Amino acid sequence: MSTHASEPLVPREEPSGDLSPGPSAVPAAPFSSDFLYWIALDFAGSDPADIERFNRFHDETHVPEVLSRHPGFAAAHRYALRRPDPRGDFGGGYLTAYEVQDEQAVTDYLTATTAGEPYSTDPPFWPELLTNRWRVVYEKLAETGPSTGTPDLIYIIGIDPPSDIADDELAEFDAFYTNTHMPEAVSNAGFSRGTRYKVRHTLEHPAPGCPFYLVVYELAGDTDELLAETQRKLGWEGPWWTQGPTSWTRRTTPWRLWYRHISSTSPPGAHRHP
Image 1 (cartoon, rainbow, N blue to C red):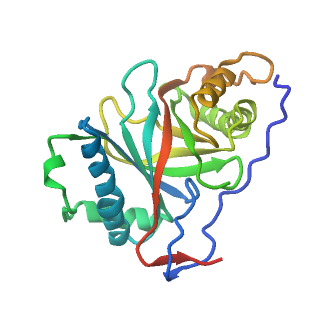
Image 2 (cartoon, rainbow, N blue to C red):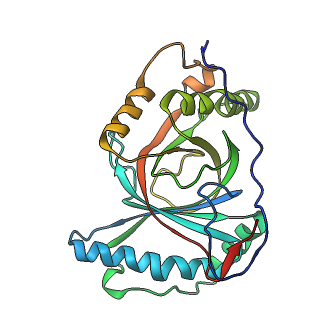
């Protein structure tokens, strides 16, 4: 058994205050909303000027356009791949995580995607240099605590339960994941927070599919030494990790990726009031 007491989980945060026109915009904190629209892509350009142009286009044109077009999209946080999965090429080079406030906003977005209304493009970059990896809507299940601000690094893990798992075993799997393993990972590795999601809707992904569960661990600081030390802590074996039920030991982990935060954007003309 673990020598760590599992941290009590807090209820999911509900958005505080109303969005109304204001002189400035404060993006919703990362991983603070009930839903997450997750887009990963690769950019094949290697010239620093092309990379700078690519990021500027996303930050100044594409992301604001998405936020203004879809009510309930409260913010977008962009990340760049910091350390790939050592087992293979499983992660897009860039990740955009849109904070989506509620189920109605998700439904409206999915309806709008069938209309096919195009976004602005930067012609030299499409389609030659860009490859979409994932477009997935996730629903939040639990968090170890409220947001502490924008993390410098995130560690994302995609997990699938065993394909032959029974309903009662899945309930046991979920309870262990939420109430024991995720708090232990935060405590043992020094993360500031962990947030757990499940797939709600998939729009695009490579074969064989997206992991059913996603957990995002947040870390303050971005140095090679800190990242290496955190990974060492995650790999330590000992009584500080609870073994879990048999179904947990049979899980698979298609994603294990590190990303660094590069930008945050809020909807144009929106200001979050306390």
